Image (cartoon, rainbow over all chains, first blue to last red; front, top):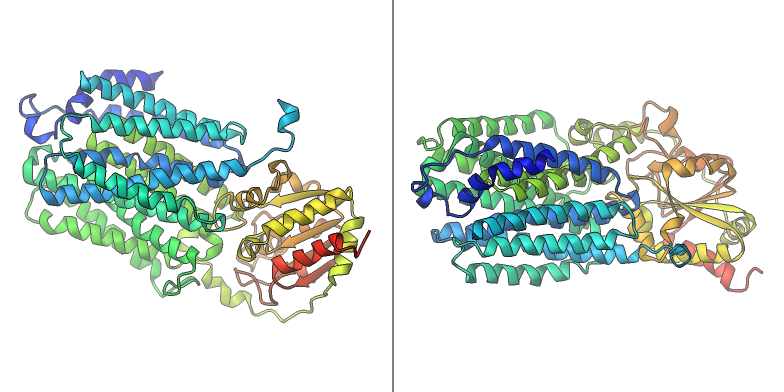
Length: 130
Length: 468
C-alpha cells in the first residue's frame, strides 16, 4: 500500500524529470527538486518485497532464478535508451549505445536461457496431480 | 499525456517483475514467470522509447539488433557453461550501469551543471563504482569459470592484499565524497576518471584471491552488485522502475549469497577477504593414506541389492559431463526396485542450483532431487551412497577438525550410509586441497577414473547382461 501511495504522490515530479533531457527544460519548470525521500522509500520497500518473494523461490531453481534476475536487472536498458537516443553529443550517445547493447544482450540471453532451463525441470507426477 | 502513459507502463512493469519472481517459487509456475518478465521488459522498453526526448532511433535500433545477435547465441551455451554465462551477464549489467552513469555525469557537466545536485552526484559515484567493479570482477570470474589459460585458476594471494584493496576502495570513496561536495570544481575533471579506474582495478583485485569452491558465493554477490548499480541508476535518473527492478535483483543476490555463506559456514568478509589459498599449504601436509578400491562389478552388485541409493553429485560430475550416464544408472536401479535419490548440497558446483539444472537437463525428475537438510535424516537408512565428483561437501572433517578450512560447514552425511562408493578422477586431494576423511573409512570404496566412464561401465553391468 504505502509503495503505491509513494508512487502516486511523486508521479508529477518524476514525470517532469523523465520527460526532458532534463537540463534544457529544467528552467521552464523552475528547477524541480528531486524527491529523494520517495525514491528511498521505493527502494526500501522494493527490497523487502524482493527478500520476501525470493525467499520462497524453490532451491531447485536457483540457477534459473539468477539468470532471470539478470535479465530483469537489465532494466538499465531504460537509462541506456534515454542516453543513446537523446539529442546529445556524440561521445555521450556512444556510451549510451554500448550500454544499450550490453543490456539488450542480457535481456535476450537471460530470458531465453531461463526458459530453456525451466523447460528441463520435469515432474513425473504432473499428469496424475492435475 | 505521454508522461502519464509512461508512468503507467512503468507501474505495470513493476507488477510484472514482482509476479515474475513470485512464480519462480514452484517449477510448475516458473515458466509463466519468464513470460511475465518478458512482458514487463517489453513494456518498459516501449514506454521509454516513445518519450519525446528520444529522437535518434537509429542509435537505438542498431544496438538492440547487435544485442539480439549476441544474446541469442549466448543463451544456447551448453548447460555446463551456465556459470560463466551468468558471470558474463553480470559483467554486461555492470558495464551498462557504469557507462550510463558516466554519460550522465559528463552530460550534466557540459550542459547543465545545476542538475548535479549532491544527491545525484552521490548516486552517480555509487553507480559508477558498483557498475565498473562488477564489470571487471565478473569478467575475471567468468574467465576463471571458463578456465581461460591466462587467468590464474588457483587463488592468487600476496602480502597486504586486503590492505591494498581497502586502500584503493577508500581512495575511490574519498574522491567520490570530494565530487559530491563540489561536482564542478577543477579537481572533478580528473577525479571522475580516477574513480572509474580504481573501480575497474578493484573488481580485478577482489576476484583474483578467490578459488573455485567460493564461486557460488562470489557470483551471488556480484549479482547483488549488478542489481544495486541499477538502483543507483534509478536514483540518478529519478526512475522508480529502475529502482524497484534493481532492488529485486539486489535482494535476490543478497539472499543467494547468504544461503551460500551459510552452506559453507563462512561470512561474507571471510569469502571476500580470506582466500582459501592461505590455508592450503597447511592442509596438504597429511601423510598419504591408502585407498580401498572396488571393482565395477562389485559396486554394481552392491547397488542392485540396496533398497535406497543416494547419489551425491559435485562439480566433478559437471566437469566429466556425467549427468546423462547418472540418469541412466538411476533408471536401471529404479527398474530393479531400488529407490534412488540425489542429494544436493547448496554449494555443490560453481553457482547456486548448478547441480539441479545439470540433472534436470539429463531428464532426472526434479522430485528426485533432495536438499541437504532433507536427505541427511535418511542417510542412516541409505544402503549405498555414490559420491560423484563431490568432495568437500561430504568431508566429515568439517564436523570436528578445526584445522581444516571447511570446519563448521554443513555437509551431506555420506559417512552415515551403510556403504559408500566414491568416484574420483585421481588420487590428488580436492579443490580445497584437503584430504577427504570419507575416502578412508572402512566402508568406503573408491572407483577411480573419469566419472562418465565409470558410471557408463556401471550401467553396462546392468544392461549388458552381466547381471540379471
